[in-house]
Structure formats: C-alpha cells, structure tokens
Image 1 (tube, rainbow, N blue to C red):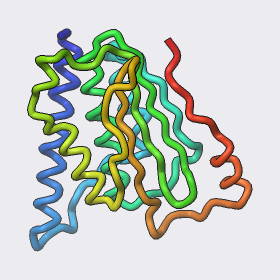
Image 2 (image 1 turned 60 degrees about the vertical axis):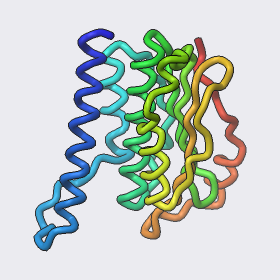
Image 3 (image 1 turned 180 degrees about the vertical axis):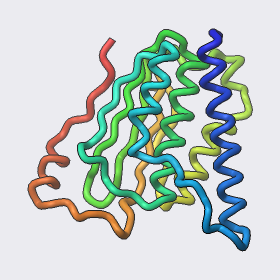
Image 4 (image 1 turned 45 degrees about the horizontal axis):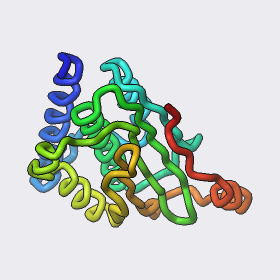
Length: 187
C-alpha cells in the first residue's frame, strides 16, 4: 500500500469521526453551530482526491445533481467514499466507476471497479464497511441493493429517496432518465 492510499484511508477515518461528532452534537441541546455535512455537491472533490492518490475514477453525475434530504446526501457521499477506499485497499490499479442516475423518485447510485477484489484472506475481514453502508443507507430511507463480485470486479449499489424538498423533475427529464443505459467502466 502506498503512502497516498494510507492518506486516503486516514482521511476517511477522520471523516467518519467527524460525522459521529456532528451527530452527537445534533443530539445535544445546542445544535445551532453544526457544520454542513458533505453530500453530492462534494462528490467531484472527493473523486479528485482519489484520483490524486492514483486511483482511476470515472464519475457520472447528473447535472445538476439531484436534491436529497440531508441524511440521503450524507449516505450517498459516504457510500462512494467507502467503496472507493475499498477499491484502493483491495484492488490497487483498478478503474472505478461512480454512477448516479435519477429514476422516478429515487437516486440509483452504484460504484463498480474492474479489480480483482479482496483476496480470500481479506474477505474474512470484519465487513463493518459494508454493514455501515447498509445501515447509513437504511437510516436515510434507502436500500443497499447489491454488494459483491461482478465477475470482473466488485459492485456496490444503493437506491436513495429524493428528499421531500426536492425540485420536481420535468416530464421530459423522466423520459431521459428512463432511456439511459447503465454504463460499466472501460478498461
């Protein structure tokens, strides 16, 4: 593992601790001074940090990004962060594809790589990363649909509800989303 990979892993851990502190602060009496949580608007910066660490990442993000509830926004960001961290850890040299599509009233989010995935020894790990993803997505009202090998890599996929205060899609936007095909990373 390179120093850049370890830096990304350290940053991910620090971000998780920051989220926990933010949550605990929200539960306290004085929550007026909480920093905003990262979300879809921050995905480009997140992906750029992984690219700078040597991971080849492609991002397919609707323009403009869909509006999500705070919980769904944070869940989407952390899911991408965890999946890309796992790609760096388990499949160095792989290409990853982050794909976000709006379909009706949900955001369909997948992160897929073309790496070899974890070795049999690594597969016996704690699995806390995937469990954490599942719990975070569920707390946001979504569902972790898929986690596992694809035959040529590893995929994590979730659906998250669009928030109640979201901007409605126009009819022609629905047709465009429905007609999109799911793209896989190219080698």
